[in-house]
Length: 440
Ligand code: PMP
Image 1 (tube, rainbow, N blue to C red):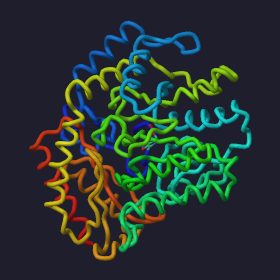
Image 2 (image 1 turned 60 degrees about the horizontal axis):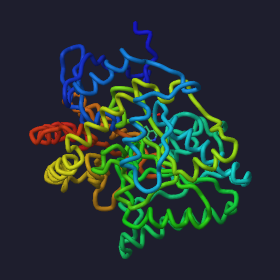
Image 3 (image 1 turned 120 degrees about the vertical axis):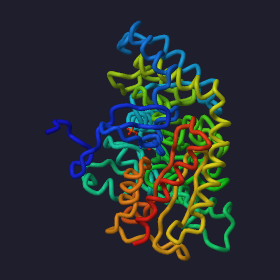
Image 4 (image 1 turned 180 degrees about the vertical axis):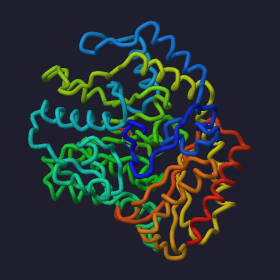
């Protein structure tokens, strides 16, 4: 009997023993193509020699120094690397150990910023339905997936949720994509006015919605309008790039494609590429200076912030993404994979949409392609698709909850940036084998 508490108690996981390039190998010797990079984590694949060496070297030299007393060379270096690439005036980095921690830190920073500036009434958070921001209580409250929130609702902080930007379902037939985006963004202004402009502290959104919607980017102009609304009312814009950031979309930071710079940006997953748990919150100098000139203290912290080994891994990962030309490679492989997915499934009666950016792609399953009717939730199509793909030797990331949190199915594909042309064919062949479950 295993004493490990598994994530899915009803279906305990297979034991992984090693990783090599784009593959994971289990204890029976079976190989799996890591088509989702876990959950958009393993951007460099498994067994990257440079990252492993950086971790070994740093662990040998200095494994831990508490940030209450020390900074370290890897933390300084990683912050410099990120800020050199970050858009706009983001120029401070607060390191954490994962995505939920980054979101918690962002919420606390937003609140403290308003307090330091003498606006204690600014307490409301606005986020979007069908978003995922993590599993700690503040991050869970911010996320807008009804199914995930349901059991914890009585103990969650109050967060308003507006509609996501979801062209596939929400755009009217006679509306342009741009006009639809402006209409969707208008919900933010309406909600700020409803709550009272001087009471809103932050708006939180994923530039490309990952886990709950399956790689859904916003339409052009949506985030520019969101930025304008936030500026008008003094509301901080927090973008959560925990899943879609770090090169996944073909830009190091996903918000670059939308032409906006948030006040606070959260990253994680791809930053450590699975080699170390690490996340970060980037913020503007204006926010940092408000704290510096005020209490001089960020009232937040975790034991492992700025962990030297995790930061050394982050330096090696960012260096690999930039120096190996992986951003152009993401765009090149994206075109190939999207093309192959369209060829294989573009006319499939139960695939309603193939979408995404870079190597962050989603396929939406529907009972009827013509009117986009979702499958009934009891069919658990995404779960069965994942299981069939796993059987065929492909890891993809499933989720129900595309529409109102109760139904709608999709899978997310987020393969390592190092995948080859042949492996595009391998992914599609395995997806075809899994697609048999759609013939219900
Ligand atoms: N934000 C987003 C957008 C995510 O996708 C996730 C994880 N799937 C998180 C936050 C939470 O990250 P973690 O699981 O590392 O806490």
